[in-house]
Length: 204
Image 1 (cartoon, one colour):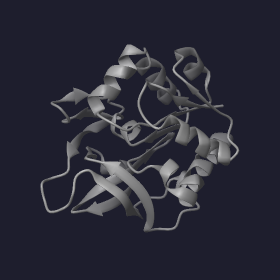
Image 2: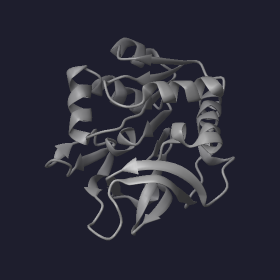
Image 3: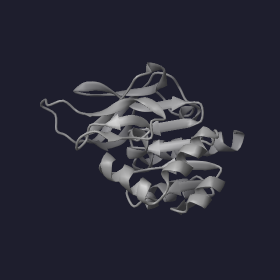
């Protein structure tokens, strides 16, 4: 069973519907025990990093999420669920993340491009995770964000995207997959990623 972590933020139903479309057994929950018992974890999110971490803490969800990742359960982080894997974010002052990966979350620099970065943009594959096995390079996915991750370890980088600067749009290590873009808003290609995550779980 795939559990979508409900911490009071994000478009959970869109993610749930996406997984249902690809035939996954999925459940939305804020129950720590259900998260502990799940086969895989999905943590989506839209909004502020600080609010996300506070809500996870208030609902006693930080420990079960970290424990699940450390046990090797497949994890898919989307947008905020991607960013909070890192050490800290500079959004609204420094806020500590889950610190699964060393690195920080920073704001797009001031230039002629609108922030937030919103809409369709291409994703260039640097190394191909299993969940991108059916995705061709330089395809378009949907983004909405003002901040992006700066990993200390460039070996984590799965894809990059250009928006005034080149930023990391996906990271991957072992059981951990995390996208800055939104698969659940990216139509057929996004569903292919969710299906790829489902296949990875089945093989795990």
